[in-house]
Image (cartoon, rainbow, N blue to C red; front, top):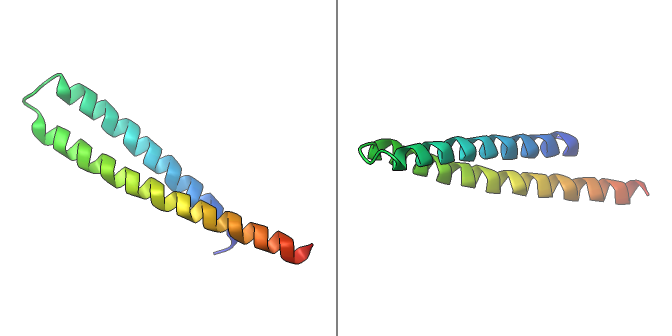
Length: 77
């Protein structure tokens, strides 16, 4: 995978993680108003943790792509 492709993949991963966090935050807000829905709350919290891991991994991809681009620019200069 080239540096620009990796950068795009990292940004796409961050976008997906952000969407998942927003969706799960909405679920948590709705469920806390109805105590009888603890299963939905647990699912939302677990999925939020998964989205956090996805975001962290995506940041690492973006950083690696940034470093590759910097190295390529240094090599060409």
